[in-house]
Length: 242
Image (cartoon, rainbow, N blue to C red):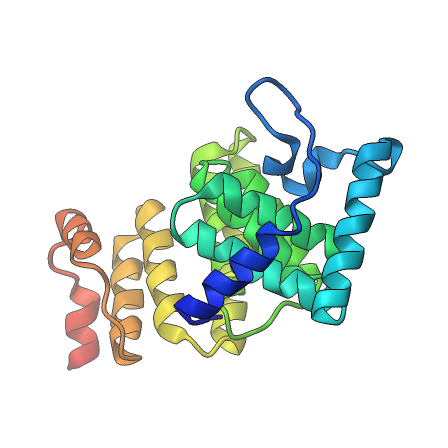
């Protein structure tokens, strides 16, 4: 969801006025930089409990409901994420979760940060949680879930080969679901092409690029260059044009 630069600054200023107490998991990791505060029961600590109540009461009064406030915190989290400020993004996503743990976009936020940290299987789990909560269908969430599931199978997952095959099939089904319901086909087919590339399925990657182009999109020159090195002359595209 896009918001204007000025509106974004105003929201960030408001959000900074509602900073809540935090604790530390270790000397290097703040608990508010771990999804869902690392599973901590914040009600056990008087200062955190008091700070959380003050925060929730304040923003609920300011924005009308916890749900509205949660959505604003999600948007601010993604603003930080897009500027590669992952720690700040995670803090905002945690506050959004504190406000409304049923907000599916909160879990997309967690997954986005974990993805950029190379924690693909953890990211997959949070994307699955988002899907359980019926997320918006116009934001590419199913395609993102498919992509990170493939990454989990191919790069981080240490399970058996059969389990990895199950994950890749899961990814394929998510891409197909995305194709059915999500309007942004350019985005979908671009991610699907990259997933096939990682799997060494280069002809199928070209097929997705063709679909991406048919829907008005264009892959990045860098990705095209990488794919051409693996499969420079895809016969499937020639046959489809005949």
